[in-house]
Amino acid sequence: MTLPLSSSPALEHLSAAALADRLSGNTELVLLDLREEGVFARGHLFLAASMPLSRLELRVRSTVPRLDTPIVLIADTSADTQLAAQRLSRGGYTQLAVLDGGNAAWTAAGYRLFSGIYVPSKAFGEAVEHANHTPRVTVDEVRAAMRKGDTMSKGEKPCHVDSRPLSEFRDFSLPGASDCPGAELVLRAPAAAQGRPIIVNCAGRTRSIIGAQSLINAGVPNPVYALENGTMGWHLSGYELRHGAEELLALPDDAELGNARQRARALAQGLGVRWIDAATLQAMLAERQQTTYCFDVRLPEDYAAGHLPGFANAPGGQLVQSTDFYAPVRNARMVLFDTLGVQAPMTAHWLRQMGWEVAVLESSLNGNAESGWPPPHLLHGPAPTPAVEGAELAALLRHPQTLLIDCDDSRGYRRSHLREARFLTRSRIAQLADPQYQGRTMVFTSEDGLLAQFAAADAAALGLRAAHIKGGTRAAAAAVGRSGELHLLCDTDDAWYSPYQLDTGRKQAMRDYISWETGLLERLQDEPGVRFDVHVARAAGGA
Image (cartoon, rainbow, N blue to C red; front, side, top):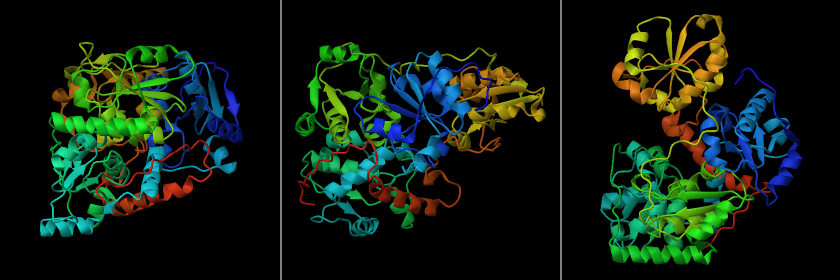
């Protein structure tokens, strides 16, 4: 992102060897890769978190809460690291460093880069399967059982559950499966299965493995299996996926809830997870030397209905699946909360094995709850630009000099966007200074309008005539309508596209993805900072 630069704060310069040494230590450190997520996914440091410069103001304060946390910036250009340092310094961050030479210097020093996203969690899933030999079934075995009306154990029809969030489950799922996001499995699946075998799947491998092993670790007596390669394996075998399903496994009765709570607590305590009270939490938060993340690990709808002040929503299965997204500060600690005593300890027992210091808050909402979603915690607000109402936008679009620009996630743009909107990620706004755009009015939009305000401010700083839509795409859609026609002003490398989201080559991409996941464990040899300590359990059902 090339924008006018003011004087930059002093940056500590780290060599690759110096950074590797710090990663092996016990002090807090966060590696922020400033490139767009799609570029990040091509190759990055194992412990780096994707923090695109284009979204820095929106994300960094909530994920790096302590202003004196040591931050190492990684980018392809010194201009980007300088701009990030300016913004972070303006927001109050005081310990800023840069990896000299970026990723190229890291590899030149003999260290590895890793492709993909959420790599630490993906690699952990492979480590769990390797250590536990997590029982699995193939697509062909499941299909054969479906044809016969029974399955691989005692002729009983299995309980088939998908461990992804309901939003992903709606997009595609296996015929006959019900949704049960990862941290909910020990809570909901045993009652639904009623002694039958349980098969767990996700879109690929990680959440299938972690989900199945969660049930096994907790001592659920049913035979439990992970579906090998999840819905990717199903699709590659030539079978159709279901779309639009909504079945979420129900909560159990009080007796089953008591069983689930007992299993989860015993498991987590056996791995060294501790329970704390509100006074201990306040003492932790008062400490200035360590970051304390506070996460409510329940489902989003439960969180929105009422949550403790200061707790962010991170559904347990997703927190384990993408720790670098929710909690990028290395050697920080986490405090988890739920209202039923199951999701938090089940999540904690995995985080503990990943090397985190983690505790469970023993508390209840007790009338102290906040409802809805907290406002975003911004690094700083955007410089003011004119705001356009939806009705006004409809009139502006009739003028040929108006250029409507959607700067949000390109995956969302491809699904649906405002009529006549062009896609341009914020990191490439400088290209609008081209003579072909001279004299035009740039109107920026994003889904909720916030990112668009920053993009409009960037354009105005370049001397362009810029505005943003008040309330964003959601607010303007009724006035101008939506479209699926694509008008791309730049590459869509702002985001990582899963194989399911590709227009072409989907099956080969799935094969490549599965090979990538299964190859991660071997690549972890001698990687600095990896601290997995996998608990080995025996399948209670004899699977």
